[in-house]
Image (cartoon, protein in one colour):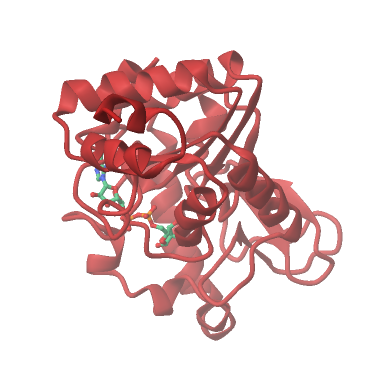
Length: 264
Ligand code: APR
């Protein structure tokens, strides 16, 4: 029995082939991933702050990361908002002002192309910056919310408010209750519909493409292993290594704006 046949199906050979792929050079990894995306009928994509870094939006844990300067527990928790809604809104006004001048980059647009090409496509983003929808993304779950959306703490009304700055404290147009950012804060659960839709995409995709996330915040951080368990090829495009890098099938280190467009 010669070795070649080992590479046929799901046998032992296939896994070692996949393992070797993982460590191949950049161009080969890009070609491999490009071919898998071109041949896939079901693709799911998971993005994080890294995809917007090339648009000038600071990440959370990178060198200029927000959490290096600000304490998440002082600003992005329901307790912090209850304690001092003015402080939290001042911080979100600062982020709104920063994001308002930013535009989608080549990586955002490339994913819109992918959305149009693939039969079954879903984009799951952890980003609240709104750059994916601004770039034309439609098959999308913003699982951590959107910085341009507000929610009433009294009647639950959810609306869009793009005022920069938003007058503090902002009040609900329906019941005059206090508005909060429509964002999923630490300690809060995702919207059940968003989670269900995202899990369905991750569990039924042939390729899961992960772009620009440190992969440590759950439940998004569980998607790579869920997709793998479901038999998908899992690929990661990221500037720095992450906890996922060693376990994904294809890992490409680089900037999203340079790599993602090359995958199409
Ligand atoms: N291209 C690709 N990857 C990049 C780039 C770039 N230009 N710049 C940075 N990265 C990578 C970093 O190496 C890092 O691994 O993007 C990742 C960003 O990680 P985080 O800052 O931790 O952001 P993210 O993973 O999206 O955070 C998840 O945590 O703070 C909460 O709710 C917030 O949605 C956020 C969640």
